[in-house]
Length: 128
Image (cartoon, rainbow, N blue to C red; front, side, top):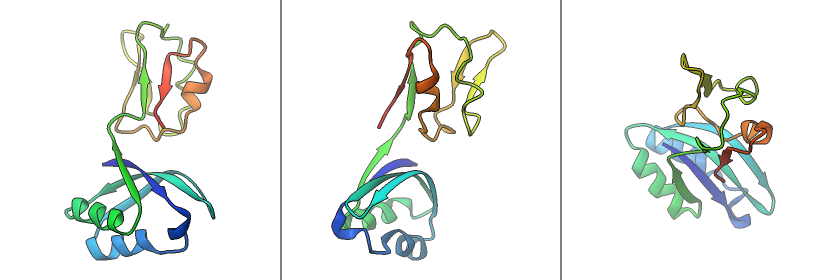
């Protein structure tokens, strides 16, 4: 599961994530992060047999967990399938299909925003 994790300043110095990894044997992949002493947020992929328990633990420790289904969305009415976004995607989540349409794989996307910034028709929307 991909989720945005929001950290308050009061918990920045605590090892909550590493404790959750040890305690619940989860895989924790940081996809994007911006954390300062004043707090911050992180896009992470969390998986494992005790995924739900680990999320509950993190929430109890003060981390706000907001699961996401989509990171970006393509407005098919606006998109002209030019492909300007494809080469900029660092994880290859955007591909050109055989029928010359641009497709975005939500399972691979990390929400970096390069595609949205490069789109000449502004047809890619980044969810924060």
